[in-house]
Length: 495
Ligand SMILES: Nc1ncnc2c1ncn2[C@@H]1O[C@H](COP(=O)(O)OP(=O)(O)OP(=O)(O)O)[C@@H](O)[C@H]1O
Ligand SMILES: [Mg+2]
Image 1 (cartoon, rainbow, N blue to C red):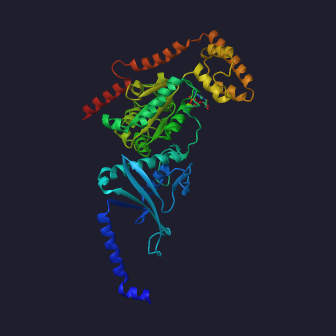
Image 2 (tube, rainbow, N blue to C red; image 1 turned 135 degrees about the horizontal axis):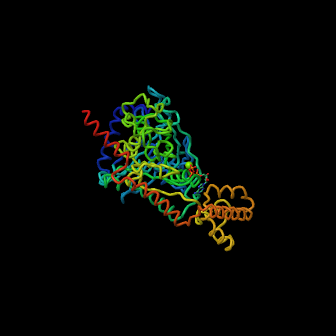
Image 3 (tube, protein in one colour; image 1 turned 120 degrees about the horizontal axis):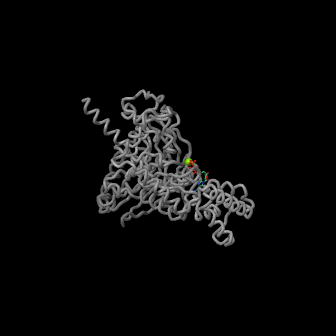
């Protein structure tokens, strides 16, 4: 009776209005403001909700008494989250904020274009009114950025290739992908530790250099040229770079690209935080024979004028059977205005023959760092012995180490050759070392006899010299550049 009396005196409309009024008064005098971030915003999923959830997963420690655990599809990690109606305090720029995870049952399903979950989930952010203008925007940006970082770390990364030869998939994507699982890291990479450290620092500086690139007006990208004999770890280095920075890899098969505009489209479809790789660049484009009457009809010649234009050759029919990609197109790809559609990209070219590359590719500013992957040196050998046999610094006899140090440079063996010997005998460590020593000695002797012996220093100098020569050979710019200039002049005349 009382209940129905109350309902008569206070009909629901009146009660609702009262509640609203008290709520208003409360908020007027409260020193806090509240922001609701609901999981579903209208009909769309609210990206910010997912970001907040991920971000809080990095701050919610395992100490919490009740946490929700999730593992997303394709993810390699479990993330912790706030349980229903739990709170967590966070600080940003010295300001404290409170996050609450609010979960309520959804009212009887109203009409919707798509079925909604039974629970209504959202985060409420509480900030002191006086702090709101100070941090809100910057804080939310920070949350989004952190969430992306976590997502990238947890997410399996991908290796993309353009092996379909220009055709698109059902989503209009020219790249095919597989999960990237290469185990190579900078720890497993056998090379001079000082050089390795230098490369790792360079990569970290690049990845953390957003403000630097902005300040200096440079596109946020970096180019590495890896050169050296086969089996010295160029591909392994690329995998290590990707694993170190948690980047995706786009393995660009130039022979599958028909013209420059296709190359540009491929570039536009790459995501940021990725490494774009062109392996064996000297084989992909004919950089040796610079004359038109080249002996190798299958290879592409970037001096051919129709090929250089790229844009006009939509059909992609050059005299070389459909490929009209050019060096200028390639340089535009890495250097031109298109190269910065998106950001945080690393270009890596590899070659076994640096001397075959056009100086236009080597000139400073094109490829920021030239990395020579050398035959196995003594410090690199120590890394291989540690990785394959578990030998630490003091585990091996001093005499054996001395002998190894003496012959390893003279033997000119690649880390790939040496790891073969070690893998074969990995269960018999001593046998592995003695067999390796024998092989190194034989190779060193053979090299001595065949007269190809070079001291380590002169090896380095030779390669550097080779590079220098390649850079210096054209006094007035490369043949390629002169050719371009001449063509421009011809065009002017035609006009
Ligand atoms: N520096 C290195 N450190 C560790 N392992 C190496 C190194 N170099 C080569 N290897 C081993 O040898 C194999 C071949 O190496 P990789 O494919 O990286 O050589 P590459 O320089 O890319 O050769 P290519 O010029 O033929 O492409 C790899 O599986 C790797 O395990
Ligand atoms: Mg390789």
